[in-house]
Length: 469
Image 1 (tube, rainbow, N blue to C red):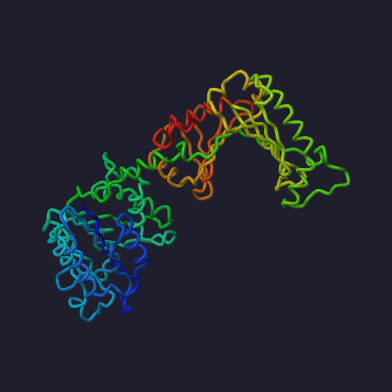
Image 2: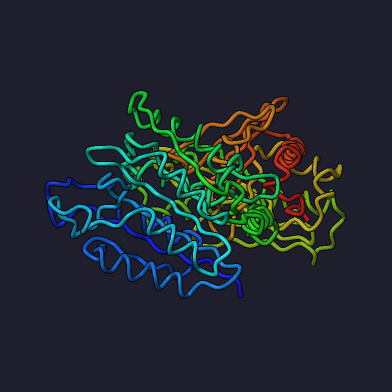
């Protein structure tokens, strides 16, 4: 069985304090190693000794089989000493660098001599004192046709960090690509290859650095060796994501909706001697429900009569009920109408009336003359409630990576929700973790449906039209 195996080597600090720290080294190394490898070997912190590193590299070599891909992930300091590029170990000593560091050539030689078919070195290494020799990196990459070496930066450059992600910039970018959130990092077959990743990083690293307010620092990703190496096949991941993003299984409930404000004092059951509540509590909600009981019943009676008149329902086909929490409903073979009332938390002198129409058995019912006559002036929103949370940041990333013609995106709350407008439609589409809603003009429910169908047409790869089935 072909496997992917990984060894991560990273240390935030060293036994000899004079070497200086490596910010987020251990977090970056661990994240990269575990991204697509179930059980990587991790040498972090004080476990990054010269003897343990050499031992685990040899074990990785011995465990490899034909067809396997081996990943070596390194985040730390490098030195150029005794004519060779070397990795600083946790227990390295400045007075004996050749004897207490591990040569870059050692990793390449050991792993390339294994039975594995592909060897990938992911090196996020900054040089201390004299920079690494780039010519040696080139020569090492040429020692084996199955060897790929990706460096976070050119020798002598700084590998910058993103404090907000506890990671280096380079590692954070690669993790985004491995998660399938950066389509431009993939080739036509949805593979993340060394070449496609390197090309994408050329634009992504400067962009990430600019967004962090770090001016215009220079960090250039470097690729040596086999550029065709497949780092990850993201086809299955993207297929599963596209098939489950907004499909019928994700949708818990579809409903037309409207929210309208009214005065608390206008409720039929409110008396002049009653006090206006200062905040919303369970007790206050029960009070609101008692005051609004007659109003709710009057509204339900009207919907009951309209349903029988417009759709020719028999008496036993229509059921009406009201509970003690300020909620009533009318159920028919084709839909369920609900009306609820609650205190407006922003202005406790007002209440919010919410009307919803759900449990729709036939989408064609929405365009019928009876529907227009009964509900044509009622709703201004079409809501799709999710049974499980929706990944809004991924949707935002995809839209920003590959913009959709005619669509404008506004991101709310650091990606917790987003609002989308489409050219040719006056309404707006809002996506949160719990629902997708289409907001339009009051009294145009078929227009809301048309706008949603237009959204499906624009985002065919993200949303499946079977959601309305």
